[in-house]
Length: 110
Image 1: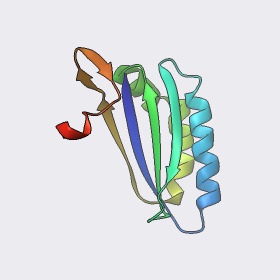
Image 2 (image 1 turned 90 degrees about the horizontal axis):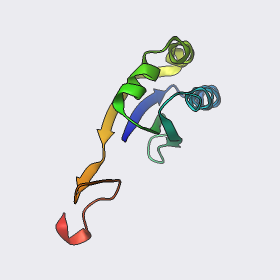
Image 3 (image 1 turned 180 degrees about the vertical axis):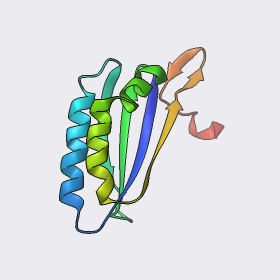
């Protein structure tokens, strides 16, 4: 299982358009093989910064969606509202005791 973090920096006064398109993107992702869940967050300190977090079964399934024509169609609608290129990062879960886990080490172990 992996998580994908995508940062989007939106132009001022384009928040409604941005939110609508990010919801459309997530709605379309929900029908993709390997998609598990997603959420959209907006920075409290920097309202231009949006963070989309999605969980996928594996990186290959994410990459199929990432490069799909369906996704690119929505991304092309988003791009005019951006002040910087979007940044996507893929994270794997830390294996602890041989099991895949979304949990971090105990507070004393950091």
